[in-house]
Length: 327
Image (cartoon, rainbow, N blue to C red; front, side, top):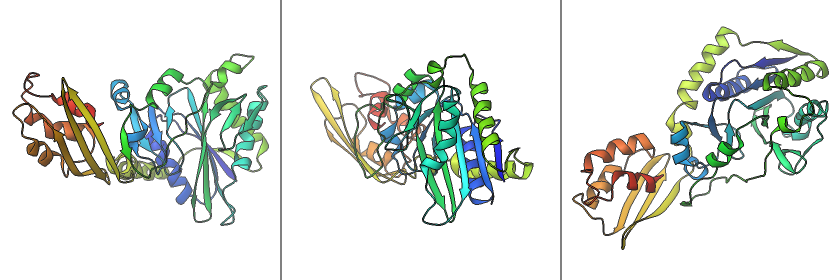
């Protein structure tokens, strides 16, 4: 039997937690469909700081999340449909992108779209990407999941996934940028995303033996919520799981140049130093003392630095200038 579930929430932390729960705690096959609210989802082995445009994320109030599978960063909104296959098989032969992409390719073909799988397991419509896929193995269980760009805000996608130039040194997985397109723009007949979701669900129900509609039980919902709170919504998972990295940045004020060096491990600033002339009444050592041992996230650092600044732009390089350099 394959349970076919449609998630009713747009919470990315719940939906990502549900994938892990169904992979590790449920024993049967699953086909899951969900749509997230505006968010950025990075791969398990990525440096969150190096992959996203922090100014854009803050301005648009996007949530940042980390999934358990590898691969690159992706932008989610309500115009993006996510699909997940969870199956059991023989260890060593579990990862099979072709098999799990086939139902999706067939469903798109039934809409008159000729879709093929690329070298990195992405789905291509013409020469443009409409889906990225990733996988995660747990014992004899495997999760394959992917995005489907149906009517996503492509301008927001581009902005969110184009970080400002940063001098990061790390061993993290880097995202590979691709030309993308929306599925809806290539359909001969108008269809909204709910209709597209139902079309894909119907294809799976009609073509996969034992596929049946299902819902989460209350026990499952409670367990997923606990996992959401303990892992997926925590800064320790979202940012702290990033590989150790170093950041070097310059701040210029007139003819003066300040160079910032920082090393972060498990999300915490372990080393911080400033070279150059740092005007104003705040001694450099006070900044260094305030930041070493601090979690590398906007809210925490702003709280630590704010008391050290007078707000006088003639005297200080400014809290905002320093904040911009740190992210």
